[in-house]
Amino acid sequence: MKNSKILSLALPAALLAADAALAQATVAMPQFGSPVLLKAGDALLGQDRLYPSPVYQDMNGDGRADLVIGDLRGHMTVALRDANGATFGAESKLQGADGAIVDLHNW
Amino acid sequence: MSPQFVDFDGDGQLDIVAGIFDGSPHLVRGSDKGWGKPEQILDREGERIVLNQYWDFDIKQWVKTRDFDAPGTKAEGQCTSAVAFDWDGDGDLDLLLGDYNTGAVFRRMNEGTAAEPLFSRINEVVHAAGAPIEVPGKVATLRLVDWNADGRLDLACGGMGDVYNDDEGGGVFLYLNEGEGKTAAFGKRQTLLAPSAKGQAEPTRPDAGLYMDFADHDGDGDLDMVVGGYSLWKMPEPTLNAVQKERVRELKDQQADLNTQRNALSKRIMEGTEGLDRDAADKLRKERLAEFSEDLSAIGKRIQNVNSELEKLEGGAKRRSMVWLYENLGNGRTAAADR
Image 1: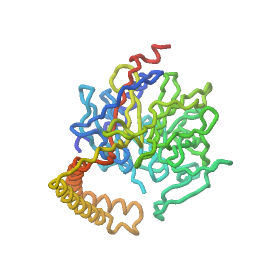
Image 2: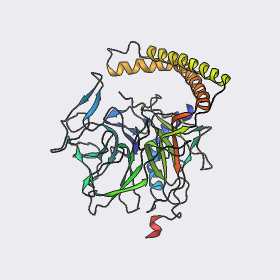
Image 3: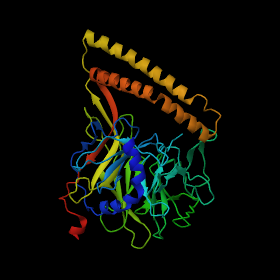
Image 4: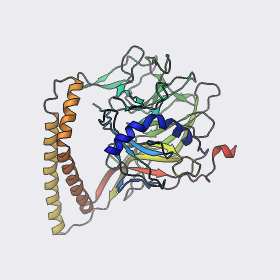
């Protein structure tokens, strides 16, 4: 949780620049390989979440696209990309400026 | 709920826009201090932005409306996905709304400014190649991506498909922005990932409820795709010996007991929230959640263990949510290098 709080304070200003970098790489024709499951730490990313919805975003300003997972419940978790660039750390819930979990609660 | 990171209000800070199952787009503002409290995005009259069905938090019921239909449309929409997008190139962000019920996409125009948005009150139908967009399997999510590197954001749609049974699953579709002026104009639908036919004996892909995003995941210069969703598969049902059958009975008893415990905790968490206004009910609910979080977590883990053992013993139809990476094998070239 401590890590998440640091993230929440550092976030938005750093993110715009990373967006621009992500937008550079684009191809015209899709030719995808077989899908592979992504992990976050030792667990499968987004496993057993209600309708996991991943979005790439550099959440800590290190220039690497991390993954944020939204769900039906209205929560978001952050899986930071490891320094090796290939794997992700364990998911932690996105927190607001007040330290509370950001909760887009539903019906 | 699929979050979009975007500077919604033009203050130089990224915000989060998301449609959620209650039927409206929401906003979490970003600032130097961090993320703010989620709020509904309102129209120019200060009303909730909805399609045709939404959850009314005050009366705690689903409500239907036709107040915001464009003339001549017969929509039955429920907005569960939304992206902010400068449709007309005027420098402020309009809204695209995905319909969970039919696969249609609607638009609300920002008639104000980036800093002071005034969203129109009518849900305009979004077309592609001259016909209303109809995402196969209904809309799970919308994403904006400059797929062909022409400087225009294209629209990608994830399909919901049949999330529970054997009917066709979801796919991922792309509508290139072929507008020649400032205003977006989407072309015909292209398939990035065909809808799943299901029927596998193990999880092989996201089959239904597809939520995707795009980035150069592996740094090779092309766009890869990450997809969250449900995998549905059917394991062969093994013939059990007497000991295994007895174990299944034990596990099912444990499963029922644990579910009863979890339901009782959920009931305690909600106790006293009836009759309170939304904020007070939220506050109380969150306090209780904090109070019982360790118990809930422990029960959740025990249920997971029981379910896992049962799954191995029983086989049969399975359904689980996961996140998959589709690496783009398109020769590693960037579109810019192609041109």
